[in-house]
Length: 318
Image 1 (tube, rainbow, N blue to C red):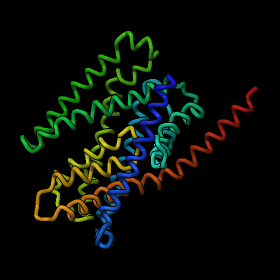
Image 2: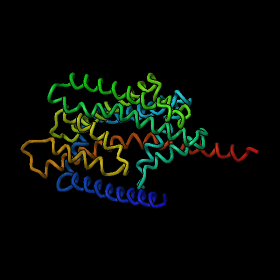
Image 3: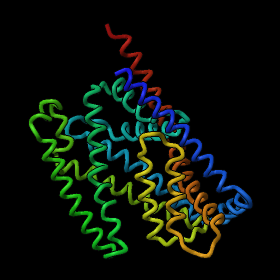
Image 4: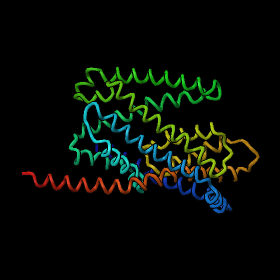
C-alpha cells in the first residue's frame, strides 16, 4: 500500500511538472514575436457580446456542474442546492491551485464529511456516480462525433441518444446487481433511479453544450480560421481533456492548441498557425478561469466559515 501511494504521488508530481511546462510553452508560443501585440489588439477590439458570451457560457457550465452533483445525490441524501453550488464553485477555483493534485476534490470531500456529516463511503459512492454519469453522457456523445462530417448532425444526434439510452440501461443493470447493493447499502439508488440519473445527465449535456459554444466564441476573439463545427468539436475535446487526473494546468491548453492546428489547412505559415491556436487555447481557458475565480473565491470563503462553525459546534458537544 505504501509503495502504491509513493507511485501515485510520483505520478502526480510528474504530471504537475509536465503540465506547468506545457502551459508555459503555450503562453510563450501565444506571445512570441508580434503575438503579444496581436492578442492585445484582438482583445481590445473583441465584441462585448462575444466577451459576454464567453463569460456567460462559463457561468452556465459552472452552475450545470453544481446541479449535476446535487441531482445525483438526491435519491439517497438531500442537501440544499445553494450549498452544493457553493461547494462546487469552491472546488472549481481550488483546482487552479498550483499543486500536484486536484485540491478541489480534496476540499469537496472534506467539506461534506465535516460540515454535512456524510460518511466517506457515501461521498465516494456519490463521486463514482457522478463519474459514471459523465461516462454515460460524454462517452456516447464523443463516439457519435465522427458521424457529423459523414452523415450530418441529425444522424449523429440520433446515434448519440441511442448510445446514451444503451449506456443508461447498462449502468442501471450493473448498479442493481446484488453484490454491489450489499456493499453500497442503498447508495446504488443514485444510479438505479433512472429518472434522477437522466435528469442529472441532462445537466451534463448542458455543460458540454457550453464547452462546445465557448470555443467558437474564443475563435472569434482571436480570429482563428476555424468553422463553427470545427470549433465546437474542439470544445468537446477540451471538455474531455479538462478531466485529466494529472492536474488542471497545461494538458488541456496544449492539446487544444495542437488539435486546432491539426484541423486547420490554409495558407498561413506553421509559425502563424501555432501562435493563433495557442492564443485560442489561452483565451478559452482564461474565460473559464475568470468565472471560476470570480464565483469560487467568495464561495470558498463561505465554505470555510461553515467549516469553522461546524468544528466549533463539534467541540462544544459533550
